[in-house]
Amino acid sequence: MSAFDKFFKYSIGKKQVMGVLGLLLCGFALVHMTGNFLVFRGEDQFNAYGEFLHHLPAFRFIELSLAALFIVHIVMGLVLAVQNSRARPEGYAVKKAAGGATLGSSTMAYTGTYFILFLVLHLLNIRFGILPQVADSMEDYGIVANVLANPIWATFYVVSALVLGLHLSHGLQSSFQSLGFYDREYTPLLKKISILYGIVIAVGYSAIALFMLVKHGQGG
Image (cartoon, rainbow, N blue to C red; front, side):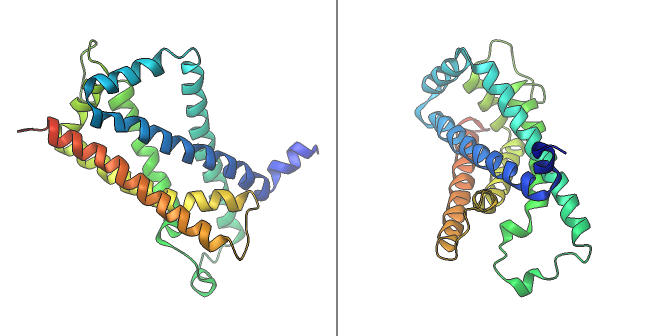
């Protein structure tokens, strides 16, 4: 068996890969959010940002790479969950005794599963414009406004932002620990940073959805 095969045979190897993927996706979530903050600057600014991205020579490659990151992250997360379940058939009764569990850490499987649903619906909404159907000539700002002007969709995006924030409130810390960044002195600080990061993500994405609802919803 090669070193590569051994690396992925044991959960430690998969966890390290998950750590790298997790950090990349955490970075993407923050960059994507800050880019979307341009909706606060107005339609022209947001559309100009969209045009810049779409005309990048490597845009298609970046888009496919992100899709691959998400797919591998999801698949490996499911594999690790099954492995952990088989290794500890008694469940996680020891968590209370061990202490340190947070709402984010204890709900990772549920929030991760929910986010798979969100990704599918988000792509159908924004990337392909299928659910709330959009005109072919509609620009990026118009597509986002078309979706978030609907209170049901806006609520869905706010809930999804809160779920994402909860997931990442532990995910960032977990990614670093999977890569070996574990120290009795610094881990509590890393835990606080991870929770703060999750709050920033939840509030930031929620603010975008609520802003667009107020501005473009009925009576807006």
